[in-house]
Image (cartoon, rainbow, N blue to C red):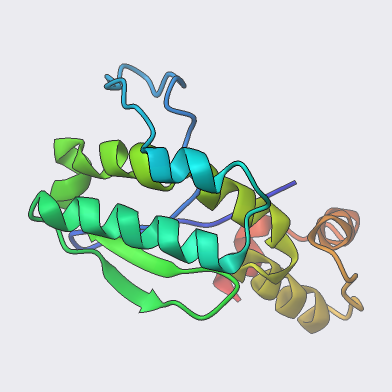
Length: 158
């Protein structure tokens, strides 16, 4: 089970797993967006960190072209930690740029690297603090958390 935490802080929206563009979000209107040729080409092969980073850079350039500068908090592998202005989200620019330049790369990369994700790190620490020797994989740690009766929220707070 892939669980990633996302928060809305001040006027910035953080990076997070995004819903599929066709997913109903309770009345949200989604604009049809065609993926860029660069994105389609990148998805023809296995996603590596270089293609993930290049996709993010195209996404960031798209945001900037529309007047919204993303803030990169950490670009060290395995994941890019970033936020975008709330105005980019509310105007729909974030969604359009994300779908056109980055969405499938981001999803593929996060799934392939879930064991090294921020959530996996938090869960690993939470289990250890609870006296449980953490498994090597996120799936294993999720099973351990559930078996120990530890809520996901507790691991976010710790």
